[in-house]
Length: 264
Length: 264
DNA sequence: GCTGGACCCTCCCCCTGGGGGAGCCTCCAG
DNA sequence: CTGGAGGCTCCCCCAGGGGGAGGGTCCAGC
Image 1: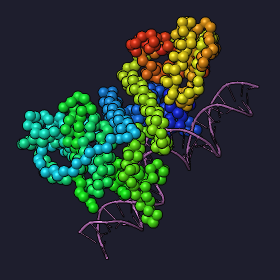
Image 2: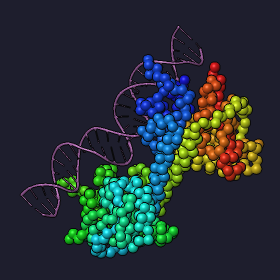
Image 3: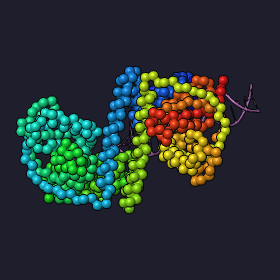
Image 4: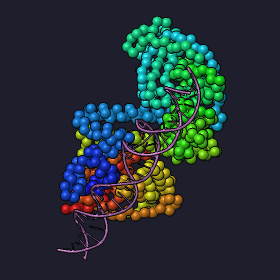
């Protein structure tokens, strides 16, 4: 039997934290003295404590740690852990994107952007739609693009594009639509025909990898406001040159179009 | 002039968060209506808001964000940002270590460890010492090792080793010592002669990359307790085979020794 | 057998960086 | 001129800890 202090030394968990884990029934001491309240731990609990420690280092929420610990089947358990590792990967991607965009934001004189205002007619395309969180957007995007290309195949009549609800950026969750233009939109799996409404668009083109695109968004937003226009509706993107067209990210071109109307 | 809602849409910062940033004078609205309390932002503030947003995505504390924003010199500013990126790198290393050690912890039947108890005589070595946080340990370690090797050179009479205060693990901060055995310890820069006291050591050897070493620590701790011994003093490591001896991490051998005394 | 100091207990408040919601005021388009 | 969208403040909530007060317990050395 180990006192909490000894157990703390053996597990690198602070005494306070061990008490908290007891309280949250994450790691119960083997024995609690009824009279004194003293906690006593067993040597066998050390590996468990270490698992908790490592999972916490991976920022796994305590609730999930509990779930993992309570899972007896090692296969299922490692699946749960793998799930969290995927989350870490996604976070790493976000971090990379933030670094890229920060580099762009902090460079002394940002290149001004060229903005066109043009009327876009309504058109019907093959699309995949979902209500999704920004968190899952990249994964959804990749899947939807693959499905679209598989279904539409050679019938493609132009570059792919997307339509993204403003709520997606404002609240982190919203409707997203990915499309491929084609003459006869099929209806297979998640792919179906969708009509993009006509709109007056303020359009600019983002060059380079997609990670720094939020800076261009900001510039476009600034332009829209400075030109006495208001935003009306979801933003549109057209992937003129993407990873499928050129392996060099510097060659990529993303067209960003914001539906606008003149205020003044 | 933009209302807080419009500004929120253009910067992807929630209205709540913008208000909080105002309160913390991180991002002050260009105009605040005295009568109504309404906040109005200028288009020019969009890039600033974006910088804040990206820095927050990198988990830079608000206080540091403020410091970065208040730094006028772009050179100094990017140095501050680079500092945080280094912090991220360090965190990534920690994450990698946690993943490695977790993999070891979760494998069904962990290999039992072989523990020897042996008396170590006192000896004098060339050492670098510091009181340091676990955070900075890897960087300090690399620097100290390089300095030791440069100073001691060919006079080395054995593998390098380290002595680490228990407080380092218990409280995240403590004294660390790295040494190289040599006949005549020189006194140059941070390198000086130090005497390792004689000790009764419970010794085991950790095989493979250093990342999973905490699991071995736990096993050694378990062994010590189960064999009715108590820990007395800082832990010692000897790097029998390290990155300097073999490029394959699987070949590395770290000897871990815990000063003990028999309780029963 | 006693005693002092190390160790343990609970309880409360603090931190960061947000979110939810109540209750009320203000702006502006129809 | 009026209704609803959108603004305001204030308070409580969350995770996952840390600091410290005030008091009880354990045990090694005398």
